[in-house]
Image (cartoon, rainbow, N blue to C red; front, side):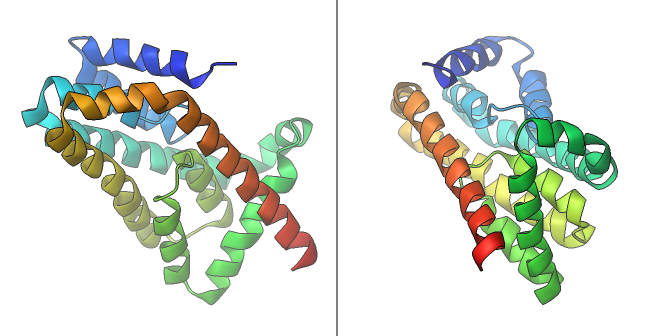
Length: 204
């Protein structure tokens, strides 16, 4: 079953549009809250088409992600209790609560332990919204939270812009070729992470 390929093709069409920079910013914003497609799949072809503007495109994506990170944090902080029945019906509540327990444990160590955890999480192919919601639910201090989001997301978009600038069209072609397995690998990693968190909360 192909899921990520069609989503990637849709993002590619957005990338070719004259309003692509706006779409990229909006996509980055929504992805930090709920959307399953990471903005890198749109950022890559935009950087290929206009490599000299790659840094600008990366900056727009980062700005959208940071705005979305604030909204995701607020939703997690203020709306989680209201959405608990929905998460329970979807079978997601145990995993979410386990993730909350891990972040709370880091909070007990120090706010900067949470910062380190979130920065490292930004290096994993896990949707940003997982961290934005969890941080809001737990109440991670905003300075550490925003700085970790800035570093984690900034690293991804600016490294991608640099890779495309160096690799050119070949880098984008490789992304297109491997988007489906990469998408499923990222999903599998997320499932493994949730399963580990559940196991840790029960047996650790």
